[in-house]
Image 1 (cartoon, rainbow, N blue to C red):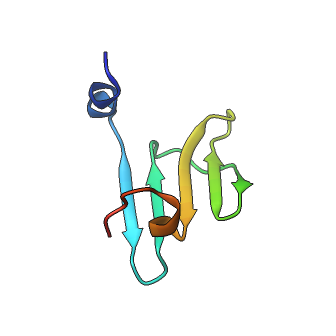
Image 2: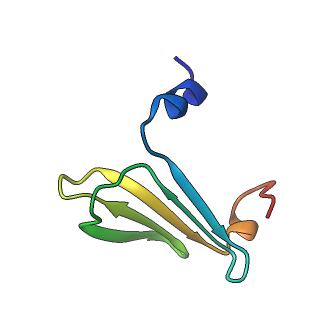
Length: 70
C-alpha cells in the first residue's frame, strides 16, 4: 500500500492553512492534544494521551516547505 492510499483510508485528516500568519496545521485524529513539542524552530508536533503524534504545526510554512503553494 502506498502512502497516498494510506491517507485515503484514514477516517480523519484535516489540514488548515492561515495565509495571514503563514501557518499550516495538519491533524490526523480527533483525539485531545495531551502535549506538544517543538522539534525545530517553527515546527511543533502534537501528541495524544498515549504519546502518538496526532498533528503538526508549521510556522512560516511557505518558507519551510519546498514548492508550497498558498
